[in-house]
Image (tube, rainbow, N blue to C red):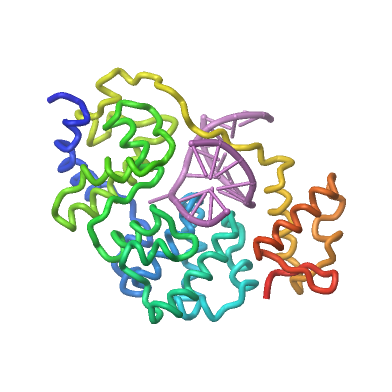
Length: 299
DNA sequence: GATGCGTGGTT
DNA sequence: TAACCAAGCAT
């Protein structure tokens, strides 16, 4: 059996078996979760999982859905409540986008989370990954779901490269080519590729000895060539505007009455002009508001 | 296509 | 310990 892009489909049955035997027991994979929260629960979980690790999402997701179990419930909340509940999950604009998505679902979809990929893509904060993840994992439909884990597995097993190229539409075509016709199997393959990338085919130290696709992996067959590293370097966080924004928002979340004068949000910040710039950008993003010289979460 | 956007754990 | 990594999205 040759290990090439053409050979990869031959490993799909083994991949399905591997997933059925080894998938992690995550909350959003449980039948009770779907019975209780439906597609809305899946949508909320996918928002939280955008760039935030699984283990940090789990407790926050439970608390969030306990408070707001439906789109209508979330839409009725204020932005301040939403940003506060988001807590330290990071990228708090996601909280506003999720809130906006809930409002749009109430206004345009009679409170029912849409099943159609284009309808999902039209909602704020939902892109190629999240739209298809909801359509597949909540509704069981037949679409390619491609996240960073899947792209890494495809780069290695299909293309013989250690790291994926920047995201592109070709990723969807690559994944579509691997999906079985059977709808149920295709959903499992989507989940299994993500699971493989998250647990075995990891960025740093892949555990190829346990991999169900090892016999078909083009990267392994080629002797693990180094390839070209086209990963984007992450900007330094220490001293950044992002750190400054985070500190201001943390202060406002923690304030007893959620309102503080600008100077006291982050007192003695080494660069006052950076603090002021961060405040302006937070206001522009709708994450905070100024009210008679006081800053607070947006009402 | 490149960049900005949080937070915390791991190496 | 600085750098890397983590179920992306909008602009």
